Image (cartoon, rainbow, N blue to C red):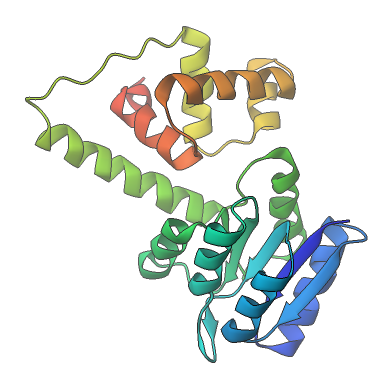
Length: 220
C-alpha cells in the first residue's frame, strides 16, 4: 500500500486531489496537511512513496517540504501541483528535488494520466512545463557552447538508434510513445534509455535534453 503525502491548504482542492490520488493509486493511505510545519512533522514520522505538494502555503512554501523529503526520504517521488507556471517557481522546485511539476488548470483526466507515469519511472510534467524545461536547457547548452568554445568536450559515441531514442526523450515523449514511433516495445525503449543515461552520465530527462542539444540532435 502506497503512502502518499498531500500538502494543500484549500479544503476543496485538497479533497479533489485526494480523490485523484486514490484514482491513480487505489488503496493508498493518504496523509493530509494544510501547512508546511505539519507536513515537515509528517516527513519525520512517516515513510512516503509519493508526495503531492502545493507551493503557496500559509506558513511558507511547499519547496521546503520537497527539500526535506529529498534529504530524509530520497526515494520519495515528490510532485508539485500548483497554479504557478513561471520560472521563479518551477526551477527552485526542481532544484529542491521535485520529480514532477503539474498545473492545476489541467483536467482531472489529464492530471491522472500524468501521475500514472510515476509507475513507469517517468516524471509527470504538464506539457507547457516540459516545453519550458527543454527551452531552458537548450538556452543553457547554447551559452555553455559559447563560453567553452576553446575547451575539449569528451566524445560520447551513441549508435544511430540511441540517438533516435535520445532525441525523442529530450522532446518529452513517453516510453510507450517512443516505442510506437520506432516500432519497438516499451521495455526495449527502457533498456535503450538506461544505456543512454549511463553513456552520457545523466540521470534525468532534463539532463538528457541538454546532452541532446549538445550533440546537435535537434538540428537533424
